[in-house]
Length: 294
Ligand SMILES: [Zn+2]
Image 1 (cartoon, rainbow, N blue to C red):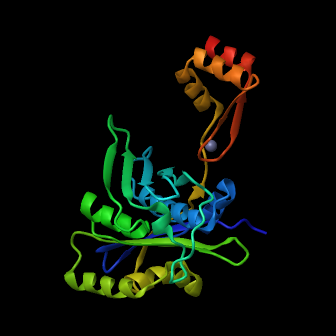
Image 2: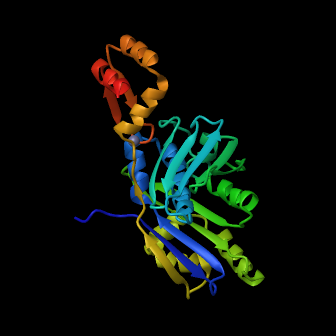
Image 3: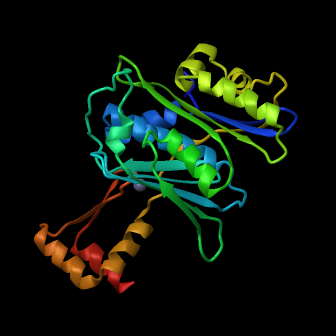
């Protein structure tokens, strides 16, 4: 059987006056759920953040550009962190992976309560001396609305953001997907009205994707334009780029004395695990000495 892949497509709609991005992220969100053993509500929170972050990373222009998203909420989930780059290799984690909360009255996972009040921060490293940092308050903590608000106030780009993660009866991610619609500066008022009319009616992006089962049809439906123009198709993946070298830098920054102290306290072992992929790196006394010698 062929391994399933995630697909992100960009389109222009309404004679090039509207940008539309549609992303089916089911495999990526399943991977995040497996690696971090996420509860359902934690899967939805990290999943939604991964989906919008990937779409934002796909809009980075510089080849080496990197994107970091931090959502610091006061709720039981703790912080959400997602990192990615222009090649759409993405990774992320949440503070508390096993948060359990009752469903909302509408039957949806209560991401807003899990995240709680707080701040959204967007860091774009485009290879300049200083990264671009934008932030805003969370307005609903349901993620999609918060990013729509961020685009509006922080980047002056009115946007429609829809994000969804469905977990099936088999406890697997049945569908994780999202879309982003951004009218470009020359977009006509009547097109804005069309977009608003359609998007207030769509209650679930995952159901729309499951029903239509086709990214192009989803793009046509959400834009209200049958003549959309495909700009690109990309295949984002979950990937962690941690390695020995990076961990050793952390140990060096900690200092030899501190490392020796940890060794003594921990049966001659220092174990460092990667927040993003949970890979464990182990060091004993001789390895530590070697690091500080070189
Ligand atoms: Zn890692």
